[in-house]
Amino acid sequence: AQSVTQLDSQVPVFEEAPVELRCNYSSSVSVYLFWYVQYPNQGLQLLLKYLSGSTLVESINGFEAEFNKSQTSFHLRKPSVHISDTAEYFCAVRNQAGTALIFGKGTTLSVSS
Amino acid sequence: NAGVTQTPKFQVLKTGQSMTLQCAQDMNHNSMYWYRQDPGMGLRLIYYSASEGTTDKGEVPNGYNVSRLNKREFSLRLESAAPSQTSVYFCASILAGGPDTQYFGPGTRLTVL
Figure: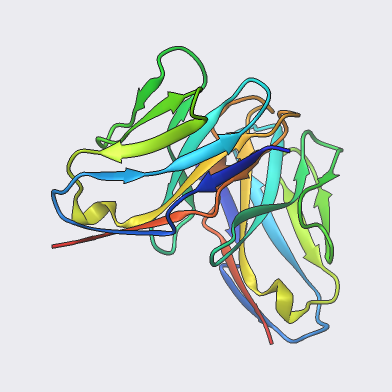
């Protein structure tokens, strides 16, 4: 069965520091991977996704993620975080049947000054 | 274009009471989903509807029923609420079952006493 493991439940960092949120997946079929962000008291929003092609995908607000097939990982990175990046981040993989997404348990990113 | 809307935003029930959570999307999406979000558990799929007229169980369907009323609306019903159903419920929709972006509603925070 497919699964997603987010290796850190909480990541505290200082403003302008780099950050990496780790995500590993298990899947035996073609992989479609997603990162969603949830700001406090809001729904989830798509941050970025990997469908095919270049293994490095970027978001409009400076995040990037790299699909690594050999390590079955899709880690999310940002070279310099802002206070406004404080949120919960979810990694997800499309299920084998193509009918739904399987989410990880989430990583809370807390950025302080 | 409101996207995905959910009502109510908040609800408090007593054990044994029933209620229906409403969800509607105006993006002409085919597939709709109900998730619950609990601390440390991520999002878990309750039910989904791949297309109008069809519904399928997800990971945690027990205690819930759904109705795909038409292409726009997908409701979630708790027939006899239990404290274990205290959670935040999210509705989501997607154009098709493939790797398209899944859009989320703002959530319903339900407390069962």
